Length: 472
Image 1 (cartoon, helix red, strand yellow):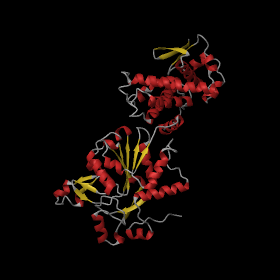
Image 2 (spheres, one colour; image 1 turned 30 degrees about the vertical axis):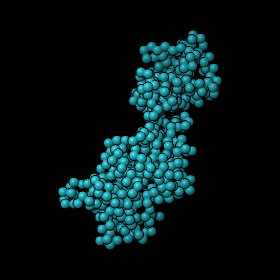
Image 3 (cartoon, rainbow, N blue to C red; image 1 turned 120 degrees about the vertical axis):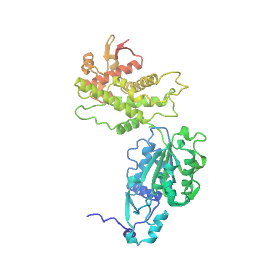
């Protein structure tokens, strides 16, 4: 059966039984319906099920404006955008020329819309439909002016004889134009104080005041904010009156478990591992990439007020896979399998994403801090494998006096020639068939060598970009 035609004029809309709702009531009702159906409420959000999401749920049901407070790369913007899914698929509005907002057909707020309804029969009042995805807008606070999000007097209209105190003299900013929608602003503490006062007026009175002329509108908008705790809690960055009017503060965090971080990394990297040159990524290499980020978040040399974004892991993961795939093409090896030596290329995707603590780094360069972070990550992950799988048997395979050269462009056969026998424990420990694929075996070998070196079991020398490990 075909769906009934949508109303195209005001009379049809009234006869259809459609009812006006505020945007917060609309979200409230749709959220409750999704909850009752057992829908996944926030698809793609990982690691927040028992911490952040319950707080968002209550805030939406309470009809609050929200502030998402957390360090960079904790999904604040993604969470704000995800609230759009609780809006109606589309809502009707008055399709009237010269009206700057999407007016509720039954509750217009602007003078031109009210006048048009008074002067026209309902059959001649056109109705259009506003899609869900178009009812959301966001803005980055730095550089944002009052006119951008609140509005300004239009000089052209003044020149035409319009009074400054007349509503028609205004050029509306983003928030009035998002009437019946959602407006989000990132990095709230960086917003000019005058703009903060304008936001306070909207949150408190739902009105717009421009250049001292109080033009009152019953603006219907859900306002979302994001901020970093280091700046939000700093005195004078956000006016107290505005803080007081924000209904709920939602505290975000980095993944509490490394596996959650890996899940986010896999999801957001969006890499096609298939194709003509397929890539197989051993799980221990994913663990290493995420552990580097975990160690960076613990490092005394890195400014923890700034944080270390999930984008750090994502960028490094992409670089590691790219390095492995390049090697596979140049050497004609399939599948491509990332190795420890591929981590030598993550400087390009890491440097610039870490903010050093100038007091703690003691003149260490960003590259030196990253080297120390990578080394510690290898030590931590390898130690876990030793504890879980007992890799003493693997250490024994190298025997006294064995030297093994590694490098990101060395053929996998080079490693196999050095290791004629592969212990069965490798397959179990690494969750890959280490003995069946030369490329996978090479990756395992490098991991074990780097781990043994990190635990000071063997020595390492570097020559012309390649490393030689030797049992001491």
